[in-house]
Image (tube, rainbow, N blue to C red; front, side):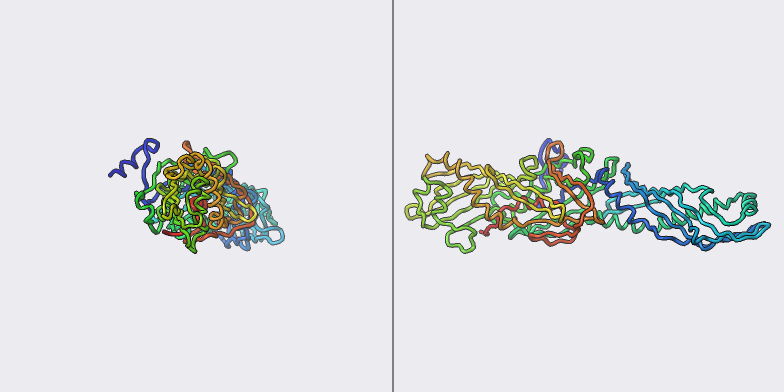
Length: 535
């Protein structure tokens, strides 16, 4: 009941909570702006058949006339295309020229109306326009359904475009007496055949777009060291406005384990605000494709990593699996000269983290994505006067910057973790043996911790990258990231589109999935800081 009441509360009035694995309704949004749709319009000609199409023979016999038509075919070319977003539908507009037979391969028209004759003929190229409206819906099974109700075709064809090598005066007079027109018959035949051919493409066009949109679905796992995340992303809704197409996906992230080292602080949920998806009209100028990631979804992923023991370290002397050597000298190096003077530098030691709070995402910092951990406890144990003691206990405020770098030549999206100066601040909690050095420890410990983390970070995420997909040769050519939404609680990845040579999809760094490579994985990777040894 409390959760239900929280969900009904204004998002800015109070936070809500998402239990582990709970579906976040607005997890990810894809914005294809009007400018992006213009880029996509270049793909339209590839899906309209332009091979010559046979016109079925036809004949008619009246009281005073008869005629037959045979050997006809129609062909057309696409010269231009546009995608026009409207209210609840996208309209694809294609234009070009069409013709019926040609002088070298004419159709045959025979008639008998007072006189009989055979008329070879053709229709010279004339303009045409087709308007194809697409409507979108998310079905109950979380798949996207695309519907084309009809195709409107207009031909700018006149009598002057029709060339017949015979005298058809008598036939035209006879047909006119009964309300028919020979030229109108030919025009109707051409338009009817073109409409038939385009109508036959409707199932393929619908299936093509459904397949493309359903590629955003993801149901699989990602390995983060010893933790396996189950990530599920599915369509939630599709909205079309004059500003473009908005594709909203719901998602959930849940780890496969809850580690004992965080059990005392693990409440089983992540905090969220339920902020609505930023409006597509507010995307930065020049955006053609926007990928927006909510902090609710990101924080659920970070919580799952934390609950699985991502930040649990217990590095001890003599442990062959420890990524760094640990002894009293290491404790003295980290804690400083005053503490180092009281510990046995050759004696045993333990470096242990106390991760009492899950990491949270921040999108309005100095990086594309900042992962904030406040606090991350750090306890240093060493031998003092022939007994194990804890000479220093501190709380670390960690702000790990994550940047996404796109190689537009290869389509590789690389995740870069930046633990630069100032990314770790220190607050001393306990300093039993050298209290006079507390201020100095707080000033100096942060950079030392960064130096300790850097080699571990490099071994874990240094090679993490993602291969972006391309659609019919259209892909991302540039990528920028900023905070989005009135409260800056969405990460906006703003891309331009163009012709690309890449097109593979997948990831390196430990992924297995049913579905396509998802761009938002890169944000999840921001929470991966260090490979650690389990307690």
